[in-house]
Image (cartoon, rainbow, N blue to C red; front, side, top):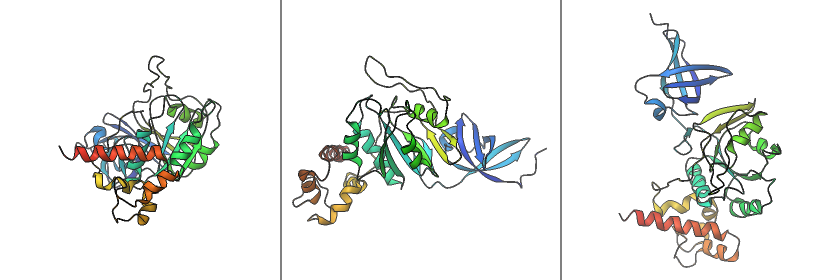
Length: 292
């Protein structure tokens, strides 16, 4: 006999494994399965809010509430900010960082660029400040190895933050350091090609402290933005939007137009040239892809 279903509660999904889901509400954790209308983790992702009913001595997810945002890579929903972790090694992929920021800003998600392994000699932090200081909501540096994490804790408090970035930049090491112990596998660099190997295979919400909520996610090296019309790419570059009113043309693409304020500021060094050159390359790639 089925139990009374009147006691319906709204839980947050913190882990997905096949058709079994771990959910949390005010410190209470439960395990639940999903109705057949949901297709495994493809229909329910970490960060979702779900309505849960008691049934046959267990719990069943009956509804997923509307999402305020949704990211495919890293797969997550209803997050407040994206923390993009980079390190001196493996060599940073600035195209990936740009695309992560674009996808986050499209959905109203704050961004933080965080340099890990700051104990290694490198000029990377200065480069990150130059490229993203007026783009991301914060650019910080930490060292999980030395347990120097206060700048990160400061931006994490009170928000659900999703870690993202290449493999072996230290996402799981940072998660472990925040938790005060080692609870997630840590990856190492391949000495052959200096690329990272994935150790985190599934996203999961971790709560290392009462006011810290983080999603550690698998690393990745590729991210597409093909769904963005090339004519709208500039709208996801906040530093270009700020100066677009100074351009001669109302919808200046900042590519070949005369009297373009963005190009002028790039030439003067006020806007970062490397980031602008990547913008031009992505613009041309999106434009060319529309022709086929």
